[in-house]
Image 1 (cartoon, rainbow, N blue to C red):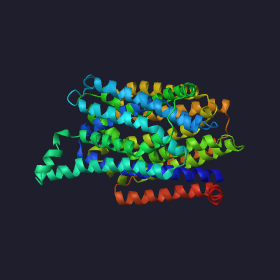
Image 2 (image 1 turned 90 degrees about the vertical axis):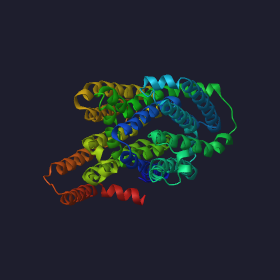
Image 3 (image 1 turned 90 degrees about the horizontal axis):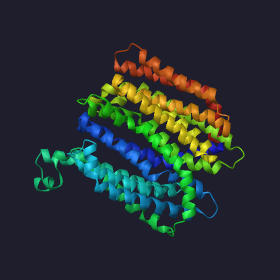
Length: 490
């Protein structure tokens, strides 16, 4: 229990900049969804999906490989330097070649009129891929303050520039205030392009702040170590690619499988409603930041497996509370996005539950990372990717973005089952399966009761849902109060 308390503390340390940063960043969602029509916001959703895919390719599993090989005696600096040089080389090559062919890429992606969007995306992912290993180093060294400062600088720059380009300058332009200045720095025809410009500047600011970390270590490239890291990381690259297909390619597929006249709008609606799952997404990301180095550090402990099992139970408990909280107050939370996007709110509970299972998969994945059998992670995630592609192709033409939501859930649910049963063979952990299933089913039942209550008044509905939330929390308290007291007092 003391170990779980320690992990909770580390989740807060690494999660705080992630949580607060993501919260601040997500404040851009209402700004952007109230400023841009659904088809314009769809451009943002699609291109950021491609950016996620490219970032996985350009980091090729080296963050996890860095954690793994830094554990070996005397290899920390050499591992960092080798990783840094490797990522610098590949990121620079990618940026040069991709920029050279940016017009052709834009034409293939139906952005021939705006090839600058593609150029900005290329620059962003190239910088972010290179600096990813410096962030990993800060996490490994537990340097939470530096980590937070750099993250907040990135996010703050992005937010301020979004506010400048999407709110302040348009207002000054419309009111013809200081036109001699505004007309020089603002062009209303740029539209969503300003979102990417803001991101480019934020990435450059981050790179500048991390330069001391980049040059603090003695640069050397250990080719033999690099080969070992590549052998370890390549299955993780396959895993990451398949994982990003599962997480983001639904937005791309919606564009190409929906009727042309509404395709971009469908992407925009789905992307905006996906963002409503903000709290669970942020928690899972914060947990992932803290858990990976934590799990590796506990691997040699005698009670490591018991720790992993307890962490899983507490993780699911927190996620189900978030699920219930978001869905019981969806009538308020929905105003996080513009009214045009509310038509897609029915995908939110499905996506929330899908993300919960993704978090469970992150917990389960420790078995193949600790046993150096990362190929199993790749196999499982490839199966998930196959499900994602197959069922999106089958369901989007029939159900639109609802088909994508259910496909996402089916994908992660299947991956959890496969990882659990295979993991029990190679690295058995006595997870509290019955309790976990109980938490999830109870949360779904509470939501369904709320959904079927025939209450028209929003005020009365919120009052009834508050009662349901209190019932839910009380039952959980009766079930888990002893465990929670052990964690708090440990």
